[in-house]
Each structure stands twice: as structure tokens, then as C-alpha cells.
Image 1 (cartoon, helix red, strand yellow):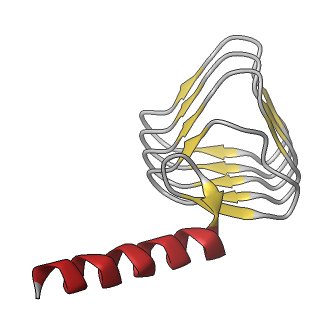
Image 2 (cartoon, rainbow, N blue to C red):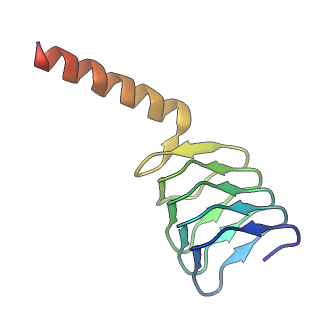
Image 3 (cartoon, rainbow, N blue to C red):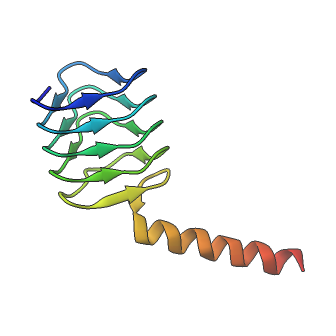
Length: 104
């Protein structure tokens, strides 16, 4: 665990996990074994990170996201499974439009 990293309550960190400097990991997050978090990574509450993955420097993981693939440095991901946040918002909007049409 790197210097200046803040870890909230109820966070589970698996074996052989490496966490960089200046990270913030919020409540109810689980990080499976051998995952690597770069410097300055922010992980929102109730997120889950699968084992043997790499989260790049400065990446942001939104709350309640499921990380099942590596996350590039500086990117922001959201959803289950996690996708880039812009894509997540587009998917959500499309599903809302489809549901409204179906209900008419």
C-alpha cells in the first residue's frame, strides 16, 4: 500500500495486491488477489475488482462498478461490467428510450 493512500471502512484487499501512492478506496470495495492499482487511483463505494488486473495511474472507478478487465491510465469507468463512463451513459439513455417506447 503506497504512501498517502486512504482506505475507508469495510474494504477487502486480497493477497498480493499492490496499491500505488495517493489512492482513495471507498467503503464496501473488494479487490481480488494479485490486482495492481497505479498511483492516484480512485475507487468508489461497493466496487469490485477481479484478480490479476491492472488499474492504470489516475484511473477512476465509479461506485458499484464491476471491473473485469484492465483499466487504462487516466480513464473513468462505470457499470457492471465496467465500461468507459461515456459509453455507460449512452447505454443507459438508449435503454430508457427503448423502455419508454415499449410502454406506450
